[in-house]
Image (cartoon, rainbow, N blue to C red; front, side, top):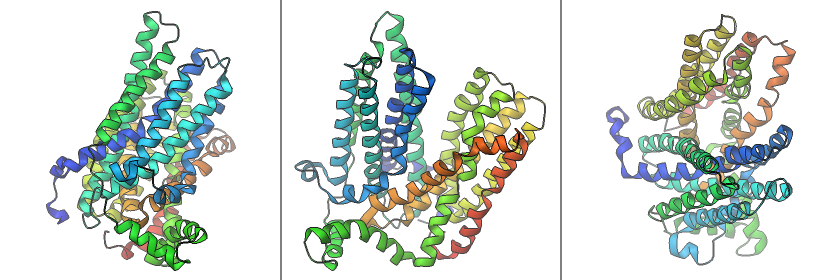
Length: 443
């Protein structure tokens, strides 16, 4: 499709509705192990430190690439033949999440804290694992040659994730609040049963998503396995782990592959540094929790959804690599706006402008980034390669941004300088992108 002639009508392709559902399925578990678990523990008067340490379960999302090769290769007995390889994994992992929720509904966290956290960890592992195959199924909904549709699909996937997380969370909290208001003692336990019904609805919708059941991917994987020694167990293990990596390096060459990995690792670190400290900054600037909720959360959700769709369209029109350059520069500029905010008097207008423009830049960057990774993967090892590349980006943001508070303290609370440093952080990734820009036909 000629990208010059692509309009917003591309979002009305029936496949986008399927991708929206997949995104929502991916985002919804964060409601369970994020908002719901934290408030459940708080309502039982457990300490802030306990609630904070419980958040460590999110760490599994940064390492799900370790078991992605197994999910790409192992078939679920009976289900794979009936509904397809990808959907069988998603439904099996959703069933595990349902079992954990049912067990949660029988527990009191004060008396069974270890079990509650263990079940939360199992939900996180199941969620991180299903993300591997959800991303693969999303990518496989669109042909490799459909660059414009891939960009549109990436933006719809991001919209779906935020919809599952934000709207699913809002609905869940409304139910918990209502049950509490009418005097139900174990209102969180009943809320978990309500969440089970939402998950069941997701799975009913999932069954209507078509999946390519051809043997092309299986035959290609089998061919790689034979290269390592026919059909022995050791050959299966080696081909499962090595082949996805070797195909990536063969496709791009060693030098370009390393530059791609460096770019993915570094691209969104500045954004992560800002995001990790933004709430603290708003509080120290004197903004109330209501101000933060209105500007950062409420308007933030609306603008994120809007700009994500526009970002996908922009990536289609300009090309993914150009979109990455422009969105990277935009992220740096909007970070500097926070420096202006830090060096100015308290202003709600400036606050709103900084947040809205930051959301715009972040949304554009996220769509371009997801599209870039989606176009890189080999369809023989879709799940493994996407999980590995996405985890590299997550690891970069998680590992390096954890020092953001230390950096602010080292700067003796000079927020203006801090935000300028976060703006500069995008430069190394853009230098790497410059060196690889001509290597991609989808640029």
